[in-house]
Length: 221
Length: 153
Image (tube, rainbow over all chains, first blue to last red; front, top):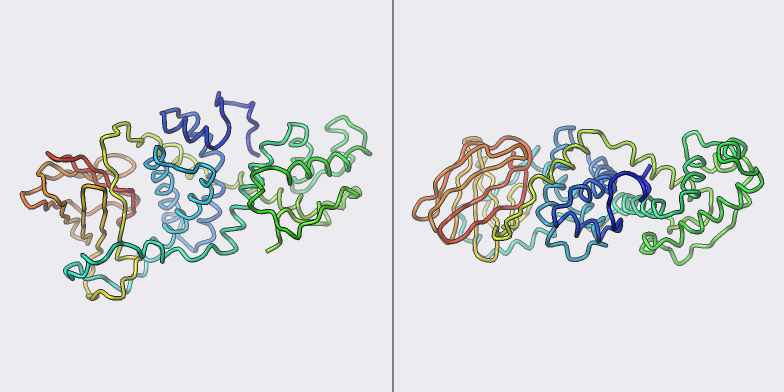
């Protein structure tokens, strides 16, 4: 579960922008927080490729070394998730090609001088569904991290595997069973309103409030 | 793919659960490597970064002739330096331009594994790189440059 901003290391600005700036200035705790926040995204992209464990680990390491070298150059920290996902994807592609290379390039061909490296973009196809899904789950984690602790506790129990029943949640949080459904709906509404989710908002999305009975959440998965 | 957020609370709850569980599924070695990468932060702002512009392993260049050799070619550029390298089982040979003498070192995430002088026309050669991300750093009379990290084998 994402760490609540009040836990652990003393990162004064928990926004990604602040973390990137702090890490660029040498604040290792900010770097650790960035790693904590974004490794799931990087890992889920890597996992969508059919790489060996060693290749997967090399891609992960490469992605983070790249971010370190780019720290002082990050122009749009809000786009960090997208940058990480794209970098991971590109390096997965590189390593997958290393394993079964068939076409090779003649280094002595002087046409290289006319080559400007634009094909860097050709190995990154339009983001596919898996990449979007990975970024969307990242946005959900970020939105969750920004919820009030009470909402985090409630949603963590209801999204556990297996999920806690409303009765169990009521006991754990010492609240009436009848308040769980409305609170869940309110917390989910806050999650939906979170800025991190804005890029993923569908225009056709409609909101339905609560109405979940005990156990209905489990049936929905 | 469904628009986010899912219209239905149950679907959103389920997707949130998947997202939160995903964050617990990252292998410890991935986290450790990611945290350790911070040690490679370049404090020295004078070091230019040479970005990877071309890699014959995965960039297709249809206009170019292909050979049947086993050499991989990579091309790096910064504002002031171009660095071309060829990687084979025998090792790395490369050329810096403009040539300014000096030395080139090759680094993995665990440290420098090889070092070599740069000759008068910018050529240098290094031993075969280990697997995993590598970067080359050149300290010359005219510039200090480091390539972006990339797996060479």
